[in-house]
Length: 340
Image (cartoon, rainbow, N blue to C red; front, side):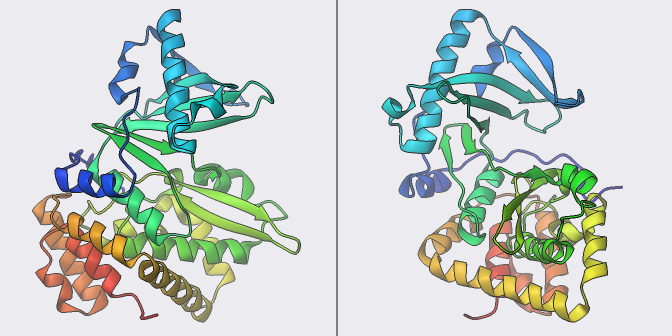
């Protein structure tokens, strides 16, 4: 049995969270909502370059509706990227609208095409879920990556996070001659700590990507989460440690081969210190978010109680035993970071 045993419920975006989003420029009035895509007339299977089913389907709309929807999606893209300055986007068109058939909430992916140079970009439209929004915002504040997203009612728009999907990377890239295994193992340790400290669950290889940056002397790797639905929901501590997902075994085994206990601890402490520095730099905004999160219901009470007990044992601290919400647990987890 996997670490995630049941489908997670969707939690509504409550008034206090909307207030936080408004104060920090995350709310917008969008010309397209998640339900706008229900009016498609047909859907065709989308295959990759090797002819394999991607588990996405391309939606087909009646011509007039497709034109109107396409123009509206370019405006959404402009709002996400350049604060709505559509005049900068006149050379762009909506090239394709896809829906994920295996996701819990059927997310929609939009491909925007530059007619001048044939370059393209993606963004996503999903049903707003408080768990996902807290996850996105914590990623923005505590990871080395900034991330753009907007919320309008029951709709959230997210930018595309570029990289090689983790499952594809482990299957086809890991054994390549040019891969620097020690740098890759180090980055996975850091990714493991980032997920655990802020309690982002379900980070199996299908929910993260590898961003590769060639340097003059070596290659740098960064592992980035791309799915935030399981932010602070499950009651078992192992769910928040990517190292325990069997889908990640190949990269875990690389780490076991390339690192000693001492180097593992070094990389772990390096990342914990960096997270603490980011939290300090974003202290006012982070505390505002955690205050709102502490009042929100994001998981069943039994999940909160079980996770608090496990973390209390792990950290050898009674601080978790008074936590009554997942937001309080996240705040307490961040309190365990080293001083900077």
